[in-house]
Amino acid sequence: MARRRQIYEGKAKILYEGPEPGTLIQYFKDDATAFNAQKKGTINGKGVLNNRISEHIFTMLGNIGVPTHFLRRLNMREQLIRQVEIVPIEVVVRNVAAGSMTKRMGIEEGTQLPRTIIEYYLKDDALGDPLITDEHILCFGWASQEELHDIADLAIRVNDFLSGLFAGINIRLIDFKLEFGRIWDNDYARIILADEISPDNCRLWDATTGEKLDKDRFRRDLGGEVEAYQEVARRLGLLPEGADSAVLDLESHRKRRGK
Image (cartoon, rainbow, N blue to C red; front, side, top):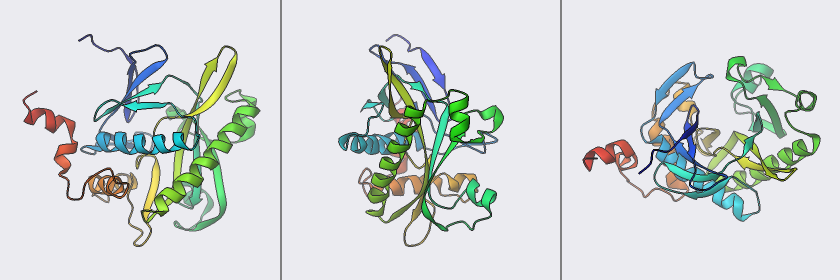
């Protein structure tokens, strides 16, 4: 089998050349980073769980008409996606005060916001992904006014859907990060949802206990990262009750099979 050509490697995923023109293979790693990669570690089996969770959510979003880059899951850690031109903006949707917002604004973590807030950050690790405004985006040409409208509209649609989805399994959607890309049709570009949606880029709290079920467990050295990710997968119906986490770790699975 020919070795696939690597296109890009990020903190949590690797992109390889796809089998057809205009496609890529997205590989989910177990690597975990925080604070712009100043903190690094591994969450065993995370890539497998995030692959399944993201597949599930992107499929449902596609079913309600949200355009995404997702085509299909290929195996435990890989999915086939459309190749897009990534808009260099991280879009953060906030329903409850948490994370950097609490530090910037002096708001107590867990405060319900009077309305949903959309924030934009420049995708630039060297600069620490700085908070930017619509004016910055338009001034520097990172997106057009029409694209920015599409991005905001899609972000609100995704938030409405995910808030209901997670509320149905007793989870509060605190905030989450989205990335978008352009699909080109001759000279016309269309904005679609890209990247992933998983406990890596969502803050998810148990609605009853407030227990964190996301990457904050890694950021804050709380422990139990694998169990938290598994709990989200279980509540979404993607992981049977009592499943052995080792089965979800592809490397261990291969070793057991002698490969």
